[in-house]
Length: 541
Figure 1 (cartoon, one colour):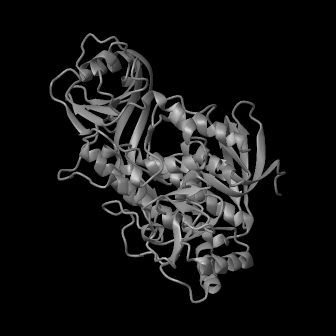
Figure 2 (tube, rainbow, N blue to C red; figure 1 turned 180 degrees about the vertical axis):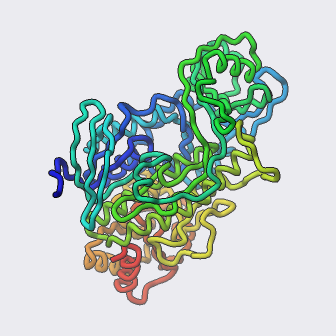
Figure 3 (cartoon, rainbow, N blue to C red; figure 1 turned 120 degrees about the vertical axis):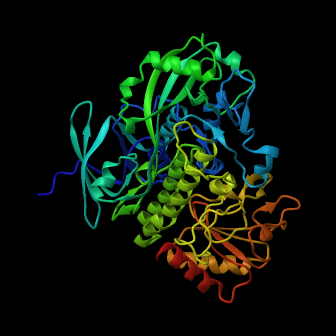
């Protein structure tokens, strides 16, 4: 007997942390109805997960919330670099890196930049924006069970406040329910990777005099290497509020209860080198660093995102950024399938694209922890310095998936960042003018497939329009040039065709997530047929 269905919704999101809230935001931007449930009563109160890389900020820019995030993050705007020292008071100090973007080189490649915004500040911004877009977000609500069939997923939800149970029928379920994901376990999906790396206890505390000692060293984090009390110090407000990550060894039988206020205070004083520092512990939370990737990113209509799909060492904040980018990749694909302009096979490309990225990024995250000698991480001898952090943030590629013409044998993450418009890579950033208003090419990508050509690409634009209309695929086309009939004008000296790896008669098709789906370097033989073939392959039509 089928249970009575209380709610019907296209998508159910399980988990209301960074990734689940981002999925809600991105689905809301695309007009996809959804319900999000989170077992906790509110967003995170603990300052953690603060590094938002340039790609993540590009996605939030297009979603219209970058200014709100930067306002929420304004208190940490002066902070740059990672410092390593035996104490804050000694002469021995080493900057592992001083500036995240020395020389402002990043501006050539992106309209955005890195942003230091703690999870407890970022999540309320995401929640507010998601609700403004119509998202149904229910906190203090947990998933009890789910069953799926060929047409959808039936889930039982329970209010943790009232105990009331409701049955929800959705076409898809996104599991953003954390590293110990009950949904992943229910699906029987295993994991691979190095497993657990190290454990820390994150201690929040107040110390009024600490800012005087830190002075103008406005770091993102300081790794303190006193062998009697090592750990990582992070500012919360650069004044009185701080976080300290202390190594924890449960594998040696050390209980969490051993981290009393007295022990934490003593550890912090010793680590920073101020025996008389007035420390007031305000909270503590354990966390576990691991390197694992799910063997599959879903089963049927249930899909994994964020920590349920992958775990990474926290150094560099690669895990949260990769999870947010999972949600972005998945949102447009679910939208396209629900709206009927893509076949169900498009969702199979989600795991094909994102799983290799997580595997390689996880390896880079562990290597970066080794490079930085992260407190608590016993590194295998021989670990070397890692180059190409920008390549991880912006240069990751999809050799296989919803693309045509990608280099299937190329690296998922190259050693150094390049932006040449190849299929399967993030489309290059270029500043354009539309009616005198400056915008980035990246601002064009969100709702539809987008075809870009130069002023001589009229044949491609006309043929593509006919093909898209015939296949009922939403398409925006833009001719980029200085003529009166062109849609967008490049800034002086910019070469659109060269930047995208095509000639003056070529064309580039970009997906709603800003990745190049297909390109032709030259003119068409039969524009309508060639473009229709590309759309069918990319969208599984």
